Length: 312
Ligand SMILES: [Zn+2]
Ligand SMILES: [Zn+2]
Image (cartoon, rainbow, N blue to C red; front, side, top):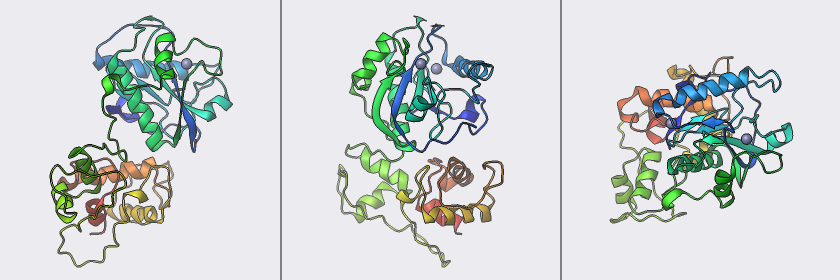
C-alpha cells in the first residue's frame, strides 16, 4: 500500500475528530465536481485543498477533512481522519458512526472512470481499515441510505460487485494479513517478527519452497543473544494491535519512556497505558528508525529485536 500519513501531506498529526471504536464497514465517495487527471506530485496539494475547503465550511462545521482516507488516481492512499476516528462525510451523525468514508479523487466531469491504480488503492484502503480500524465487511457507496449521486455510477457498480482487485492482484500483505504463497508468506511473517526467514525455516524444519499454511504453528527462534540482562519474554505480535489493549503495552510504554522515545503524544505528554495507540506506534517507529538493525521495516510494531533493544 502506498500510504501517505497525515503529517506527510501537511495535516496535523492526529485528527481532532471523535473516537470510533469500530464500524460496520466502508462507504466509498467521489468528489462530485469536475476533476481532471494531474501529476501525482500535485495530489498532496489537492488533498490539502479539500481539507482547507472542509475547514472553511461554516454550514457543516467540520473539525477536519471529512473523509477517513482519500485515494488518488495513481493508487496512493492519503490518510484523512484516519482509523478509529468518526468521519464527517456520510450525511448524518448516525451514518458517520456506522461506516468509514473513503473518497476517490474521481470527478462527475473530466476523470469519471476509475483507473485500475485507483481501484487498487481503494482496495488497499478497505483492507487497512479492516485490519487497523475494526471495520466490518460491509461495503457500499455514499448513496446507500442517503439521497446523492455519490460515488457516481461507474465506481458504485464496482463497489456493489464487492470491490474486486483489478486483474486479480494479490492483497496488500499489510501488518497481519499474510499472503498465502510459498516464500512470500514466510517472508512476511519473518519480517513481522524480526527474525530471519532462514532461521524460521531451520527451526521449523521447513524446506523450500517454504510453504506455510494459515493457522500453522511456527516456532520462533530465540534471537541470538549474549546479554545476561533480564528481558521479559517477547509477548508476541498479537499483543500489539492498534486500538487494542494488552498488559504488555504498558511495559512497552515504560521502556519507551526510559529510552526517551516519547515525542508523539496526545498533548499531555506520553503516559504508560495498556492501549496500543497511534502515538505508541509512532514512538516505536522512531526507535526502529534510530537503530540500523531495526530500520529495515520501521512499521512501529515491536518484534523480538525491538523488544530486546528497549530492554537493553
Ligand atoms: Zn459522498
Ligand atoms: Zn496521485
